[in-house]
Image (cartoon, rainbow, N blue to C red):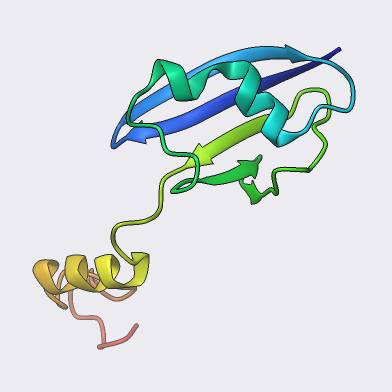
Length: 110
């Protein structure tokens, strides 16, 4: 038997976590079927989500090992680069960055 943890990000700031015991040689698809996640959460759509093991993308036929953390993640709604640019524009250029705090009498950039 293989012990794994199944984690699913159902909605923002809502996480479903479950420990599973599966037979040796079980795959990602087997874990999803054994969890009963599709029946327990009506909003769960495995086609719209991405599977990963410890943060790395995984295919449905990938074999699970002892102690694996199987994650089902939703797609990003905002590109992280765009979100960072927007936060930077809201903060303003003077209060951010490497040289935001200068010593009294110090030269610019030092």
